[in-house]
Length: 93
Length: 242
Image (cartoon, rainbow over all chains, first blue to last red; front, side, top):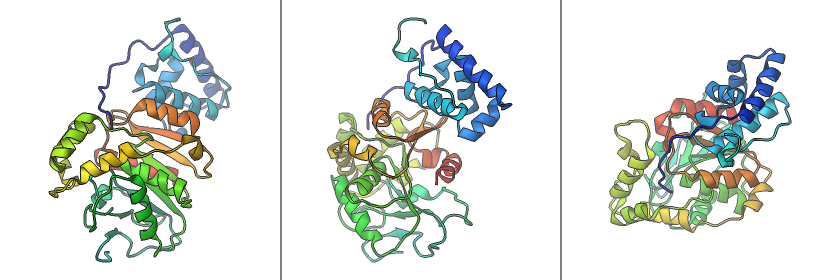
């Protein structure tokens, strides 16, 4: 067991993540689902759904959660989207 | 229930028609892990847990090998022809569960790792505390691992004047497996993590899920002790998975 500090996330929102988030939101609305319904269906905190749709990943405790929930939400909506790794990207911030 | 050496918790009234989950406690912990877990009685047997040697009410000596613990549980379960059994390991218990399915071909229906991941490497500072005694190690783990304020958390750990915590933590450090072997398992794997868990290495989680097909769930505002910090939410998640 390591002992690590939980650090506050830096700004984890970009034009690119916002653009991807809109794809999620549009597909969800097309399916007439609310954010809460999605959250309940895939057992994810509704704030994480909002984070993905708003392209703001600072809500996630760490990259691994953002990545997993991105994939889970994309699968649920049957979207073929790649995770934009804002955590390891200097560009587009 | 006890066979004088080994303590079996909630094994006295198993209904084979219901789902069963064997919980496996983390370092220095025992059957008290599941005292707040609530599963629907119509669908599940009561949470099953066996105290590892030298832990809780089981006699014997603790071990610095995960493999010894998994072998012990395999042997202990032999008397019970349990159908429909899933494994849920907390922290070190997750490694034991992994070893049971990987090295003993234990046919678990589901495998759930709670606040647990492979590899689990223990910080030197914690090992140093464990060398001083169980109480020092428990205090350290609680200090760094507990996010919510909980009175009585110390009661979940061994008070014995032995070095069970040191053994368990060394067992985590010593345990080696090949993630590629896990990915070929035909058992669904779920990982439940606390969003405020400072004792689980998230880089290790990333490496694990890169290789091993699995589902990840987060418990918000929870540290390393999901079983105590939010047993209701954990019970809900486990019921959803199994």
